[in-house]
Image (tube, rainbow, N blue to C red; front, side, top):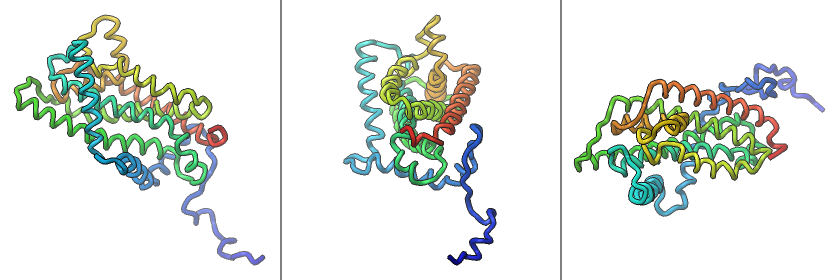
Length: 290
């Protein structure tokens, strides 16, 4: 056999990429994630297009879903239960909560099955596995942006019809609140996805658990309507601060404290960090258990 002299004399520095085993739990290879950003955008486009490619109404479903959900809330919680909306028009109150909660819940549920749904890709092609959950968070962000436009249209309509609400400077916090939602959903989703490689039942429980958790968040009622221990318990949910902060910024109604924002920041970052570390550990051998 004749050896190629170029191959024989090639130095490691000549390679574009060297794939090495991860010996440390804290070695996240974030530089590689940035290097594969084009792949991330490709996955985002795939998720977005696959949602409406074979549907009649296409991206309009991003608007129909919150509108139908709002209609159900108006009937059940507004008309039958008579739950207060803090003096705000009920459709506008519910739309803000639905948009925020949908983004968070979709990030959690879709990220929680990332190993199971993409095992065939992970087993054949190398790329930073963190790209996949990140693409889910970003693609859901596109959907959230469309729903924010729906909220803006609803705000304009109710303003022209004489409803009493006002946009406040807290609206400048909305990008920060969205990032906290993304971190929270990403972290929880990666924790569940790592656990479901061994415990498949968690994938079934997460959808049910997310639905129950919504009632522990101020999606259908304002925090100001609660008192005592119940108000304290609901305030411990990081999503409560996020939704209340969004309402305060968009319509001027919401129980929001800077200490609550600091608490939500600490919890969201901590959960995202823990989720990333667990995801990083499991990705090395999940193919053997999935």
